[in-house]
Image (tube, rainbow, N blue to C red; front, side, top):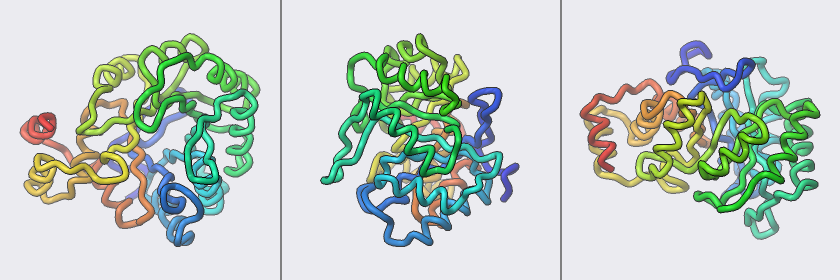
Length: 287
């Protein structure tokens, strides 16, 4: 498989930024609970190199994964980066000594986070920076104007090419857009958690990407007899079906499933090649 034939096709976020819809999420390259180093660093490097080899051009990461671990591994595995590869990172949180995820939205924290991502990834400018402002899987009410304005200023300084937002409401998206354009929204969404259905359609009409995290249900796989039944009928894994459903849900959906296994990476990518029939979709939509 080559970069020209990866299943799922591509999506153009901006005139200078086209990515494979099937991306890769680097969160699981860190240790347990996304904290500390991986048990097998060589395996983590192998997964990244295989992802690029099979045509993934969109890797999602953050300096607070580890912390610092995933970005250091990405640089070790892939730098100097292919021109076609685009790295998307997040800011707005930290890791504390207990492995928690406290918010870090103060201007000086955001500036430091952007510079840390640049330094550890070995870049002069970041392709996309997402501002994360909500909780684990739900938006937190309130204004994002102050932190998002800081990132807009860093964009003007040339350190960031494009901006996005994460774990946000439709109202917060509109507020961000009143400051500067965004190219993507990264929220919690999957076949069984569909509260963003209307938002996805609205973003598609604007040409803005929607990137679901936890597309397989979180840290534990989706448990659904309907999902398992469709998978058995098609002779594929439930993971492949869940990912294929997302790709068929809307053309602006980009996927970032994570794994620390080359075998699972290939299984995830195979989901992009699966076409679900109207009967399949009807069964799955009933979940």
